Amino acid sequence: MWRAWQALHAERSHRVEGVAAPLGGMVIRSRPGVTPWTAIDRYARRHGYHGEVFDFLVECLSAMDAHYIEWWAEKQEAP
Image (cartoon, rainbow, N blue to C red; front, side, top):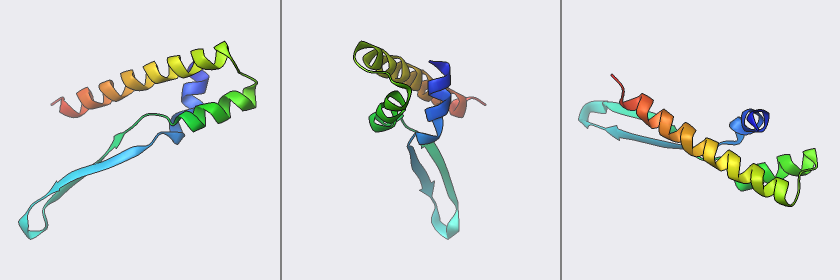
């Protein structure tokens, strides 16, 4: 599972967000999103996962993504 999550990490979407102030002040950062289902499907097909195994893969990777995004958000708020 960990190998799949690592292999698909680069497929993750990112959302750019930020604020701008007068006179050119600006703060922009990229917030990670979830791994697209299509990327997981492509990975599963390549490795011969289907049926219940595929469903389990999607469930696990989705949970790992949720935890990663939560961890990332907490890290941004830390001093």
